[in-house]
Structure formats: structure tokens, C-alpha cells
Amino acid sequence: MQFTSGNSMKWLFVMVMSLMLSNLALAQEINIPQDDPYKMVESLSNKVVAELNARREVLEKDPVQVKVFADAYILPYIDTEKMARYVMGKYWRTATEKQKTDFVNAFTNTMIRSYSQSLLKLRIESVNVEKTIEEKPGRVTVASSVLQSDGNKSDVIYRVYLNKKTKKWMLYDVVVEGVSMLLSYRKAYGSEISKKGLDTVITEMQSKNTAFNG
Image 1 (cartoon, rainbow, N blue to C red):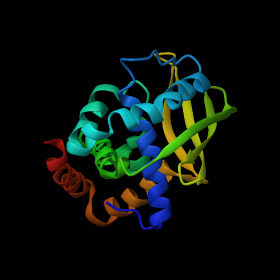
Image 2: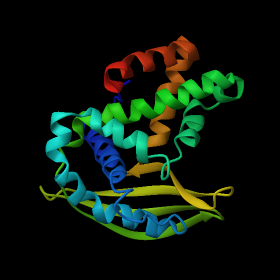
Image 3: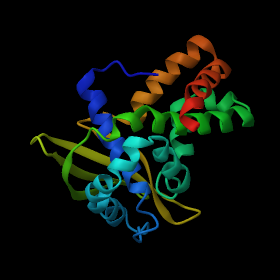
Image 4: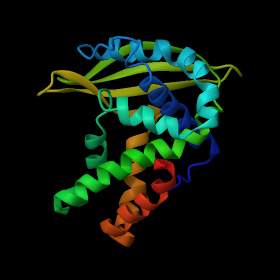
């Protein structure tokens, strides 16, 4: 599934996913604190540029390695089930347990697949994590700015919530230049499910992900 909001917006989403995915390989090298949302985002962001550049050659030869990183490390920091549930919207309430599981898995793979090929085109010079704003108890936004080597600068806001069971802060949305990635996915998939039905959408997602999964 492709967004139709233009090349510039697609590029911004690619940039955000690169930040998330390049962070995955850092999990074994640094201690990512999840007891504080600002520290979590800052700890990840501070290592993004160097880590991406260090692994560039390997990922250029084998983009599937991005999927390997994601499978191993993305879940500690990003609540993909929460994202998938929101993306499905009203269809989540009537879906079977199998449909929910299949959609979560397919959605996670689709996010990674959609941006892995564009990941290495980015040249991010620095990421500046600026401030945390509490939306309500247990839910905050962490603002940051991303500077690229060509001088372009983009405002990126991470939406984070506190998991009451694990007591860990988890990412669940990214807002780039005022546009929510999660809301964009919800609009796109809501339209597809309405037209084709949930099972067909899941099957199509799985089919597109087959080659990516290796």
C-alpha cells in the first residue's frame, strides 16, 4: 500500500522509520532506559547516525537484515499491537483473534518492508531531542528536530505512553511536520478494509511481504 500525499511526505515517513529501524541494532550495545520517555528517545536518537553509517554497507547488500533487526529488537520500544489496533479502528472490535494476530504481524512487516529500501538513501547529520509535553497522565509527546546533511530540517514528534503492566514507556506514533504516521495508516487501511474486507487486505499484505521475509 502506498500513500498518495506526495514525494516529500513519503520521504519524511521514510526518515522517521529509518530512525526507528536503525535504533534496533543498538539494543544490545547500549542500555535504553524505558522509565523516562525523554531519556528513552534521547538515548536512541543519539546513536542513530553513527549506527546507520556503520551498517550501511551490510544493509545495502542485504536489505532483509533490516527485517532481522526489527524482529529481534523493535518490540521493546514500539507497541506494534497498539498501532495495529488503532489502524484497524472499528474493524478490530469485530475481528476474530486469528484476524487480529495476522493483521498485527502483517502490519509490522509492512511498515518495515515499506521503508527498508529507502533507508540507506538518508544522510542524517544530527537529531536534537528538545522537550517532553504531558498530554495526560501516562501519555506524553517528545519533540525533536532532525537535521540532514543537505541542510533540511524537519520537526519530528514521538508519541509515547506508559504501559501500566510493564511500567515501561513505549512508542506508538510519530508525527512528522504535523502529520501522524499512525493516522495516515488508519485512513489508508480503513478505506481498503471497507472496500475489500479484512481477510483480503491481510492476504494482500502477507503476499507483498513474502519476498521481504526471505
